Length: 323
Image (cartoon, rainbow, N blue to C red):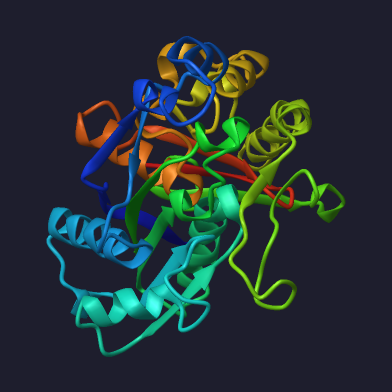
């Protein structure tokens, strides 16, 4: 059985850090309020010359270096993003060019904060189907560019950054002991589209628009949707919460993260949390958290790692990986 095994990982962040203290000078808020309700203490904000493509390229190069590979060793690039450099061509093609890759395929995938989970699931399908041997999966965002900086309910939440994984086809025995992606569970329900969205686009307003969110509505649905796809992953593999070494959730809100872990019976010491330093970086949040925890040695070869996310649409999903 072919498995999609993690070969490398990497990340890139903008130079500028914006603390909650700085936020206090922009909108009517406070460090105490932001930390209490979200767990966020700072976020990174893209500056001049820093874009979704440049950050994605940085994450890609870090992942390639860690894997001991070059762009010539790849045959697929998928970029999960809601903030592309251009309407077209795809940011993935831009990054492909920046890496000097002149073969294979590259495309963007848009599922908002669930984008990285969707992209890993898509790359896994390509690999298992024999359409790719090595895939570079990137989550990269510059959400600061679509924020309404006068809206204190949203501008304090989001940040910019990029993370990447390289997945490689390897033979497995078809058991849960195999390294690689064991299962992916994806969901969406468009009835919730007006609860978290951007109020612009080429076909409607001809503008980029700004992010809009009904925070209470998103929070109300989040824990239930997250536990749904995690329990589906357990059912698909015959595993349990006790088997999970690390839960790596989308970094949206500390209360959602803690609530989901508690409902699933996963101890908080097994949960990777980076929302305090990165804020919500949408599709970049999971690979940034993976880079942090794998980079510092917490996530080790052979560990069972659960990824989960929920985003605008609504979209939500999980991926269970043997690291």
